[in-house]
Length: 247
Length: 241
Image: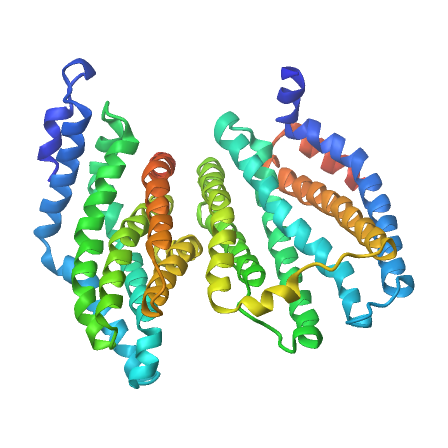
């Protein structure tokens, strides 16, 4: 158990594992996403109320789902950084923070596009929307702090502290926002409630969620590999690797 | 400047108790702050000026101010606390006091807690005392003013405590000011929401005890958790410099 743990901390070992995993993650992910989106966009039945406009759910829900779980993954990695000083955990946080920010933005953007025909407005200060917006701010904070500290070790630990403080705050934000909103606009709440979907709708949705998860895994591996190459540029194995690829 | 601490710079066996050390840190922060009164006054002036902007910039009508007043006061208070956070550790960091503080045998998070409380006494408390005047100026009614002050009384310590994490994280960085706001504002949002929500409820005649209790829960959470995060952040920033 501890040996595996120890190995996990080694960038070289991870680099190799990632290289073998990545094609699987990418192609299975793409296959699932294409299947899910194709089914969802072209073949799933229309919604009786929203017509075709509901189909953006097949992009909106996976990205929103992932946006939140990426932050939680970052928090776990942050804890690992603080407790075990594992370099790879910090590489993960730095590599996926921009991805998480983009996914959050995507969720907000598709939500706005969906909101226009459904609610008649691009934006309302609804509980969900606001807490996603704050999540985006948290991502920006993590990226900004990571960029501001040049020393690698301090940067890793400072970012880890910030991510953990943020994760304590996420449930608070979620509930405070819901609470605050129900005080003012209880009616809009009903619109965001999920309708009970038939299987022809939720199966493709599930496929797209899984597909996006796998593609995220591929992207995380790729970005982590890049980060490792930059950080470990002076070690022999990286130089050998680069030379071998260069030939 | 650090004369108060020379007494604790002995071996741990003869060091003073934690409570004494906390009190020493607290009193020292108040003393050094009062030697530069302008620094204390600036956030308060900022608070008053930001509140003034809204009637002039948006609308001086009584109906608008009555509705938006609590929010305006809360946002202004939040911003002026944010502005004052830079002073929390900056001077001590520059003159080396902070390093001595970290080296003390007493737990760092308790000393940080004392510093945060001193910061609240120096910035949050004056804001609370000033709020009734501004509350009347934005035409809040009697009961709302009282509730507003109460929410500020409970809420501003939370702002100081959370802010101390951000101040510690950005210590010694070049663009610390903007970065600090970027990190801290998202964390301030719940306090703002509950603070203004409570005053809104009070002005509509609804009971506010529940919301005040929730704000109290925030305060307890911040009091117990924030000093740990600040202490960890301070150690990181000091090892960085």
